[in-house]
Picture (cartoon, rainbow, N blue to C red):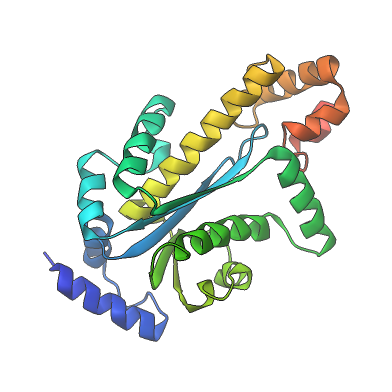
Length: 249
């Protein structure tokens, strides 16, 4: 097994070369378990018609990585809703002020999406904005030179959204980034906040808003419009989804 110092040496080379090509599968496996000082980011709500888009970032050093691994932190998609919420509380306790959660409510999401569309930008730009914001908030609290993000778009989308401190960080985009403990922790924080807010909306409007964008979602959206009007849909749903066409026709 590769020792922590060897991993850190390879990361330093990565920072200098701005490339991920020198990493082996064994390196990635070790990084996902114990890591090094790194920021991981992820988002939740991207594929859900109802509810917010939530981005999250977590700063993890070797000590915290071991603690996170010991409580069972893994990709949020492999966990039940209840387990995500349970683990999110433990992650917050372990990482204290070394995490950030960026919540974009449905109404704000719709506003931002409209602005980005007018600028000939798409959903990837909005996702990049949420990841960049999570990184920037963390960099105001900790020093870190590397961030790992799931591969969802061109790296320049994220780099363009970063401000002064963020411009100095090396962004590693990789498929299955949730295998890294920092990204896995971020995925859980993002998912837990999304679930909390979806339940909050359900309580406010006295309706059970489902996840995803299934036929059930269309049915509930139509019931919502009957009860609250089309204008209010802006407050609870991401209107650019194709789902809206089925709901509003």
